[in-house]
Image (cartoon, rainbow, N blue to C red; front, top):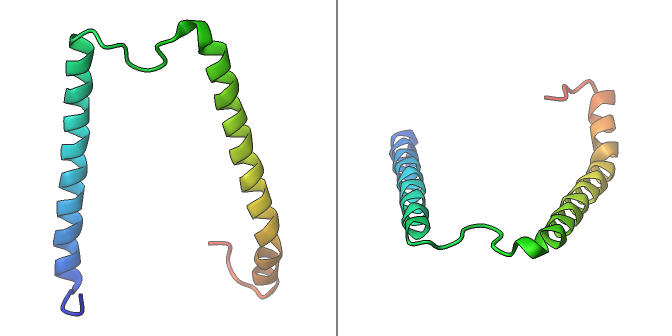
Length: 89
């Protein structure tokens, strides 16, 4: 959009924000309607809750490991910038 300027971006951001709110409201209304119809929401197999918790913990651990790997891979760049007097901001 070569004709876009700050005003156009401001308007587009406002529209995007409003659509995000509308999506959230529609989702909440749909979940409330489903619950009112008696649909079980969330983990609906109580006998398997431990399995789900293990899977969730495993996923969280994988996320931590990936974050640590990424931090280790960029640490030399951070140190290099600090040595050159750059701010960590």
